[in-house]
View 1 (cartoon, rainbow, N blue to C red):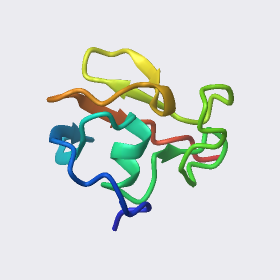
View 2: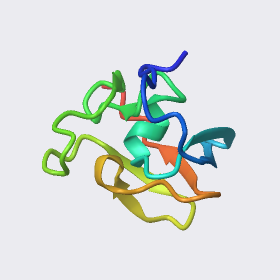
View 3: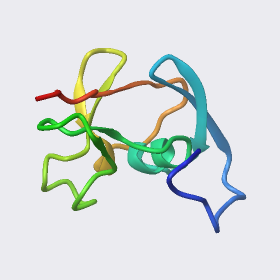
Length: 96
Protein backbone atom coordinates (compact mmCIF):
# COMPACT_ATOMS: atom_id res chain seq x y z
CA UNK A 1 0.00 0.00 0.00
CA UNK A 2 1.28 3.49 -0.84
CA UNK A 3 2.34 5.81 1.97
CA UNK A 4 1.02 8.92 0.18
CA UNK A 5 -2.21 9.41 -1.69
CA UNK A 6 -2.41 11.96 -4.48
CA UNK A 7 -5.28 14.38 -3.91
CA UNK A 8 -4.71 16.92 -6.68
CA UNK A 9 -2.99 17.41 -10.01
CA UNK A 10 -4.12 14.08 -11.41
CA UNK A 11 -4.38 15.52 -14.91
CA UNK A 12 -0.61 15.49 -15.58
CA UNK A 13 0.68 12.80 -17.98
CA UNK A 14 1.63 9.45 -16.40
CA UNK A 15 5.31 8.43 -16.34
CA UNK A 16 6.27 4.78 -15.96
CA UNK A 17 9.40 3.63 -14.13
CA UNK A 18 10.66 0.58 -12.27
CA UNK A 19 11.06 0.44 -8.51
CA UNK A 20 13.27 -2.39 -7.26
CA UNK A 21 12.59 -4.19 -10.55
CA UNK A 22 8.79 -3.83 -10.36
CA UNK A 23 6.70 -1.60 -12.65
CA UNK A 24 5.45 1.63 -11.10
CA UNK A 25 4.13 4.97 -12.27
CA UNK A 26 4.15 8.60 -11.26
CA UNK A 27 3.18 11.84 -12.94
CA UNK A 28 5.22 14.18 -15.11
CA UNK A 29 6.86 16.74 -12.81
CA UNK A 30 7.02 14.44 -9.76
CA UNK A 31 10.20 14.12 -7.78
CA UNK A 32 11.46 10.58 -7.25
CA UNK A 33 10.36 10.91 -3.62
CA UNK A 34 6.76 11.68 -4.61
CA UNK A 35 6.69 8.95 -7.27
CA UNK A 36 8.06 6.30 -4.90
CA UNK A 37 5.85 7.22 -1.94
CA UNK A 38 2.68 7.30 -4.08
CA UNK A 39 3.62 3.81 -5.30
CA UNK A 40 5.03 2.22 -2.14
CA UNK A 41 4.97 2.30 1.65
CA UNK A 42 8.55 3.53 2.17
CA UNK A 43 11.46 5.20 0.40
CA UNK A 44 14.45 3.30 1.81
CA UNK A 45 15.79 1.49 4.86
CA UNK A 46 17.55 3.31 7.68
CA UNK A 47 21.35 3.16 7.68
CA UNK A 48 21.24 2.28 11.37
CA UNK A 49 18.40 -0.22 11.76
CA UNK A 50 17.00 -1.09 8.29
CA UNK A 51 13.63 0.25 9.46
CA UNK A 52 11.55 1.90 6.72
CA UNK A 53 12.21 5.59 6.09
CA UNK A 54 10.27 8.12 4.01
CA UNK A 55 12.70 11.02 3.78
CA UNK A 56 13.12 13.75 6.35
CA UNK A 57 13.78 17.35 5.31
CA UNK A 58 12.25 17.09 1.80
CA UNK A 59 14.62 19.78 0.46
CA UNK A 60 17.96 18.06 -0.21
CA UNK A 61 19.79 18.90 3.01
CA UNK A 62 19.53 15.87 5.31
CA UNK A 63 20.94 12.83 3.44
CA UNK A 64 17.87 10.69 4.28
CA UNK A 65 16.42 10.11 0.81
CA UNK A 66 19.22 8.56 -1.23
CA UNK A 67 18.18 6.09 -3.94
CA UNK A 68 20.20 4.50 -6.73
CA UNK A 69 19.41 4.89 -10.44
CA UNK A 70 19.86 2.19 -13.08
CA UNK A 71 23.16 3.70 -14.22
CA UNK A 72 24.57 3.35 -10.69
CA UNK A 73 24.30 7.00 -9.67
CA UNK A 74 23.14 7.68 -6.12
CA UNK A 75 20.75 10.66 -6.04
CA UNK A 76 18.52 12.46 -3.56
CA UNK A 77 14.94 11.43 -4.26
CA UNK A 78 13.53 14.70 -2.92
CA UNK A 79 15.34 16.88 -5.45
CA UNK A 80 15.57 14.62 -8.54
CA UNK A 81 12.77 14.68 -11.09
CA UNK A 82 11.21 11.46 -12.34
CA UNK A 83 12.00 10.61 -15.95
CA UNK A 84 10.21 8.07 -18.16
CA UNK A 85 11.72 4.59 -17.97
CA UNK A 86 13.95 5.28 -14.96
CA UNK A 87 15.13 2.33 -12.91
CA UNK A 88 15.14 3.18 -9.21
CA UNK A 89 16.58 0.93 -6.52
CA UNK A 90 15.96 1.66 -2.87
CA UNK A 91 18.74 1.38 -0.31
CA UNK A 92 17.74 -1.49 2.02
CA UNK A 93 19.56 -0.11 5.07
CA UNK A 94 21.65 -2.09 7.50
CA UNK A 95 20.61 -4.39 10.29
CA UNK A 96 22.55 -3.95 13.51
